[in-house]
Length: 222
Image (tube, rainbow, N blue to C red; front, side, top):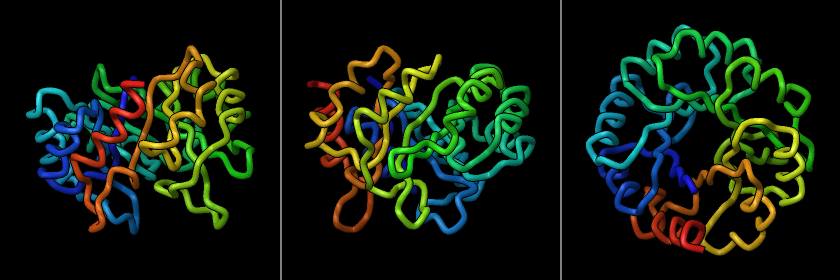
């Protein structure tokens, strides 16, 4: 099971994510107004810090849709994954797939609101365009996406997974206590892992090794 801890903003946080036992660290770039949004130079620095841990792969998390710009930023930072967290169309995935360095993987987020996935009709198109994996996340009632701390329904997750040919990561309000709510999702043959943000943070809003480790152990060890 892959565990991604998202929204690192410092070298210390990257190292804490590694110490917690996670395999992926999310680095925000092109997330306007995001509390962990990084300029390109800082992204490159933290991606290098992830490599230096010897265990973490870096994930560029973005709302941006300019494939050429994203591919350039990804190549300069030498990230391992690019996660498209906005409503980018399959054409963006296709263009990005052509431009990214060999070996870099593309994750497309699928947004679920009130049990319905906006991009569900496009799952096949995203796969044909070159998506390597999907990430299922909840949309807040006010339309906010990303780090909403709202959970998905297990049956909705598996219903979407049944429509895919690619593996998926599960996000949305996951913590050390709610793995039992997602038994069917975890057992699904295309389940790849989880994506966590809020539950890995301390009272100051910073990623903390102990809190991240609690999530990792609760989900992976079970």
